[in-house]
Length: 126
Image (cartoon, rainbow, N blue to C red):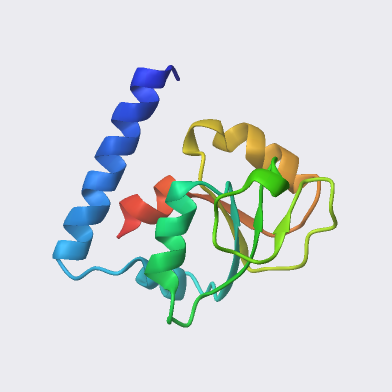
């Protein structure tokens, strides 16, 4: 996926998310319907911060984040791990960089036995 396709895909996904919010569909509903209460986020950029904002004060707990650049993260989570660290057990890991989902999923499956979900699946399901 080239940069233009990535941008276009991101735009359409975020547009859908805004429409869902307008229609009073909440991102937390996806997690509750799937029986997911404790999650980790992979990719600690701006999109992760929006997920943190959306789940703040809900019954879905963001336990930690995972990022390649732990020291340079802009995310507002206290516990950030790298793929080299032992990852604590969670119900699911949500992958923010959807364009690299398959590669990231493979890396995570080698580290932890849990459900790995693209942010695309979450957003397009609400």
